[in-house]
Length: 117
Image 1 (tube, helix red, strand yellow):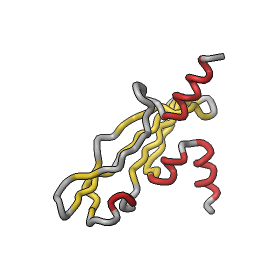
Image 2: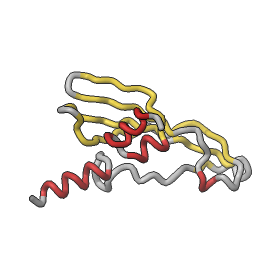
Image 3: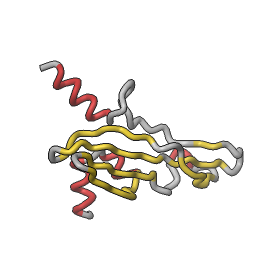
């Protein structure tokens, strides 16, 4: 295993590290920006058909847990896939953002639990 990937899985949502590539990172003052693009691997749910990568959806930005005193923003670009048989655009159903927020599900759960104390 790659030790850097293992470390990233501890710091970031594992879903991101497994299904997305980090394409850029930038630190501006007290903010860490991490840019992700969905990997080109064909999603399992579409493996029975013939699909090809067909660009990206609009980038979303969500806030995650702070790291070393820095705010963390995840900039995520999800792939769009084209089913060559039906000519329909298809996509994975990602549950990256907590309902009603712009934060990861894990970070929102943490803040919710913190609010109860």
